Image (cartoon, rainbow over all chains, first blue to last red; front, side, top):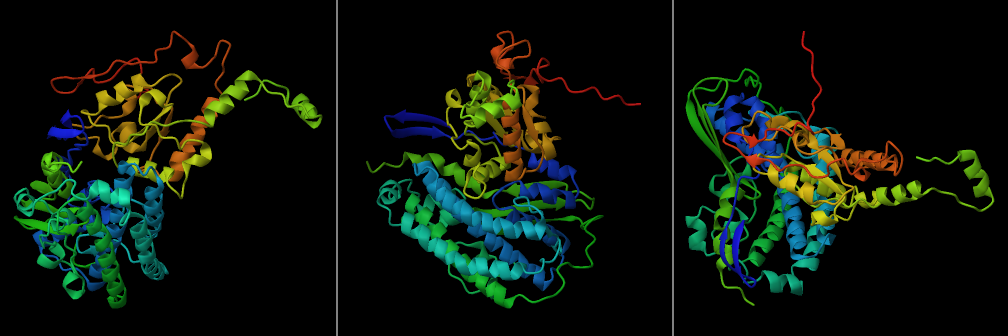
Length: 327
Length: 206
């Protein structure tokens, strides 16, 4: 980014994008519906499962495909596991950048590795899972997977408490994050900010409640909200969301039943959806992730558009930095 | 790699004398304190961080000191997709590193463009501009694969000679240690590849 500084105070800031522009949309328009699925993994490489889900959801909307019950539950479980590991790593990276070189990141990655073990035994890959398909999921869970996942989720609150003890009340963290990077609710809404960043400003907007996609209406959970919209609130939002994810996961483990995981009517290989357009969106860990597809009846989409959460959240970077600094 | 007679060395060791050569000692020190340059480009960088984190722990091989400055780094791990916008910066960082320096090309994208090869903004392999020592395939490679590449690099450093006709490249003043930085051309990077570095094998098609 281009920054104009006066001492340590930012006067002007212009983010420069495009260092990782990988022509995702053009590739998606030239590939079949199925072969775009592995590319969605690589959009946000921390949350491949939620990316898969958003894409599968938009194709399902486009073609009107029903998803079996077990697959929907599995999707919820995997999305919430993704949220856990994403938020944990995010806290680690934030503290890493604040100067706590290494230690918090080690704690976060210790937990992340356990969740990645689950992903790997399910899909065969640690990060790039490529697990969901339109009309269900690729394969059923291996034996013992559910028990291992249940154990992991039961033990997870211990990690959250450990992290809270280390971070939330830490004087250095409080001094360096409270009242820093304040974002007003009005600007956040106008700039299209979504996800934990929007909720940290006190705006109650979570697609899991608003859209109620998947089986989320079947679970009881709360949406944590911030008050000040500063960096500390955004940090706390992650900690509280991890707690709510654990609540959702526990309910999902109780409700999930055996059954088919793939809709047998869907021919995923020679897939030709009817002419039309669809926008499928989900609450990814970083915000609203949407895929907009226009079909002309062929094997590949006529238009393939990704509505990324982080790219749009970064548009207010200058406003966050220009706010008067407390020091 | 040793030039000393192993039998003689064992005999001396039995009598409490440990013999080594300058080259062996120097390479032993170098290979066990490789300092990588701390930068990541895409997905592979996350696996690189996982390699440095608690479970895989690259510190066991002496490579945990990630340096944020190219002046202090020995090893460049090109982890992720190199876009055409990013390529000049990477070559410039490589030029700023002091000799001896090594490059690991991590993942399919850094090797050849990988799944994004057809893209208009993706460089089809970092070896078009800088020499690469170890390639690791995978999308992304597992942390074990990065550790394997690291060990391969250690093996290479161990075998480098300090003197003689076939001494290491970085000791030869005729060998270049900096390479021209590509510029943004009308359609592509100018030049599209540095032909002195990039010499792909010719494939005969019948």
